[in-house]
Amino acid sequence: MHNHHHFQILLMNQADTFRHRGMRKRLVELIKSRGISDAEVLRAMEAVPRHLFAFESAFIERAYEDNAFPIGEGQTISQPYTVAYQTQLLEVKRGDRILEVGTGSGYQSCILAEMNARIFTIERMKTLYEKAKKTLAWLGYSQVKCFYGDGYDGLPTFAPFDKILVTAAAPFVPENLIAQLRAGGILVIPVGAGELQVMKRFIKYSADEVKEEVYDYFKFVPLLPGKKN
Ligand code: SAH
Image 1 (cartoon, rainbow, N blue to C red):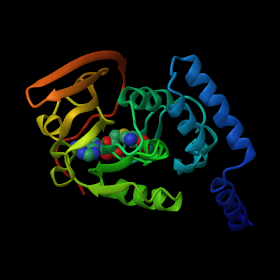
Image 2 (tube, rainbow, N blue to C red; image 1 turned 180 degrees about the vertical axis):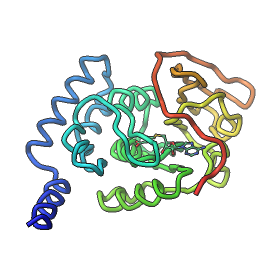
Image 3 (cartoon, rainbow, N blue to C red; image 1 turned 45 degrees about the horizontal axis):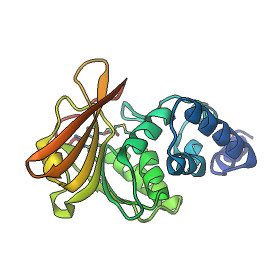
């Protein structure tokens, strides 16, 4: 009886139903009312089933609220508004090569893949890296390349990138990441070692000309040094 019940919940969790799509539509309306205007960002958010990135039933039910939730290892999937905000700042173009630091659940990678970008994503926690790789394959986002490593290093082998997105709080702006942007490239990164971080956008015009823009305050989990198993 107990097992049967558990199996039913599992089946429900793995489906994208009419009800889930309805909740997603309302979430997108909310994000729009909060000021996100990029139609492609809103379309991607409506397309990706966020509840399939939750691993506990309590959070599956709440996946379409505008909140972060835990994904294990003390990490979180970012709040939908934050995902939309960072994605909008990236000005994603079809075919962009994008490096994401902090794969986490893989949700943000799917949003970028949905916008027809080519994604390279790094995660320092082995368990999250393994889990995200499976989720991405299962959802059919095979164009996302997952890497287990340290985001501070970037991915020199695959550089330069058109865009770089950091999804954890950086105490400072890693020089490697600026170096791995092509001329004309954009880095979006929440900066700050305290409770709150300020969203910054760097536009690299050339090797020695980088413009810095400052946006709103957000709360991210910290970017951690080095690798961990
Ligand atoms: N983009 C994710 C949310 C990321 S939360 C999503 O859509 O679900 C931040 C992630 O950054 C966590 O998974 C954390 O383990 C990872 N992280 C922290 N420090 C890192 C580092 N130095 N290099 C790579 N990933 C790191």
